[in-house]
Image (tube, rainbow, N blue to C red; front, side, top):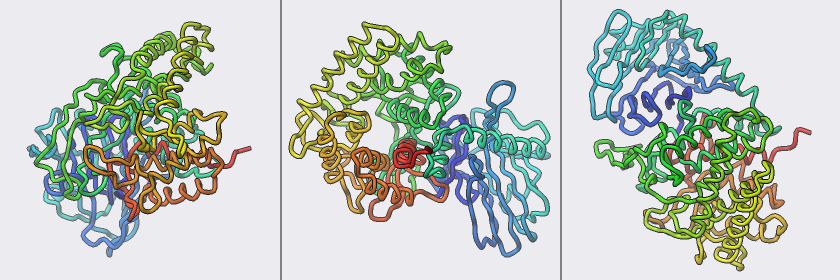
Length: 584
């Protein structure tokens, strides 16, 4: 899983050794134009390499989402710089559906090969190609696709190496073609894009320790917001299996409201609030368009058009299918979203820095509406956060988020002088807490169980410690953490999500974010040395670029599942802040 991520909050791409093997145009949840990640033959790719490679080094330009790959060959060395333009222009962000690639000679006279083979409709459509004086164009997509370059077009069309005797520039555009000077535009865009990302990082809070992984995680989170609507996507990819042969291959290129809350929580900790304001607009639009009964997941555009399909013609990642597009989760009842959405929007109402926000009144009304849904659904069985397809239960995690959302609504009511919101929140908070302790607390060994009347465990309930559910009863917090740490451990000492068979059998992989939740929970109950040891092991699992996927294979420490996963990087950020020394 040694891919790097580039993007500009309109689209994203995955690159490995200067080969773009995943790129969806025009949006993150559109069909891929390069999808070799899922099919080596029909998936399409945009590759820069050499016939005589001796070694390759790939890394980000410091504190950016710009990737630089260096090739050493028998004839010399050259670099490839890949980026998606993003910078401030005319009082807004410039984020075109455009990728720039710059090839520069470093030493000697290297040979370079460029192959660009886009496809349409998830590889089912071959595109018509033709060339003009300085570009290659493809027809068959919803908008024109064009590669503008100063490289020899015939060499690119034939996939033939050519001598790199001067800098080569390639601009791949979807829709609006490049009609300005190629070199000047590419170099100017590179300078401004690097400056944008480095400025964004400079205005980000970081802990005293673990700064490099926190910065990389922050940059990855930023790229998962589709800025046009404010949606926050769960991952860049679809159908990378949770573990080999599992069949757990899902499309994560959508906005799960739950994931969005956790992402916003981490971004707030980093001192980044713009993303929260954009997401609140997204959420308010959902409620206005679809009413107060929220689904767990929506598209980047803010709709529910995501019927799940299997693409039989694609073999999948390393041949391990099926390949799915769309996600059945949009049909589920997952009632924890109401509490999470109150938590997600509450900062606007409780933080004095947002006093002039035009959204305050609408957000205040939205909290009332969300709290009413919690009260209505307090004891309603649901599919739970792990989206069990064949099981409806009263999930403890859902009750926990009812409790947390109601508590925050009470606090908002008190802060705004809204007595009705405060009283209603307090009443529902007490009721949710009582339900958790009466129906989900197992006194031996002292742990909240996954669902009412059940004994099985759920790693997500470590968040009861994070949210302060056990405040004033540290003994319960300690037994709760210990029971989950022991009961959900898999080979290698990692943590899985839960301990019962679901629709697809038993879990074999370790769910990455659960392990970060354990790190933070251990630190909170005074076991910081153990927490730090686990955290260091998790850091060692990151790929060359410092990125994490959904899962870790316990026996090999390999990354598995959809990639990069926002949940995983949120967990990384929160755990790093919890373990770090204070700046003071």
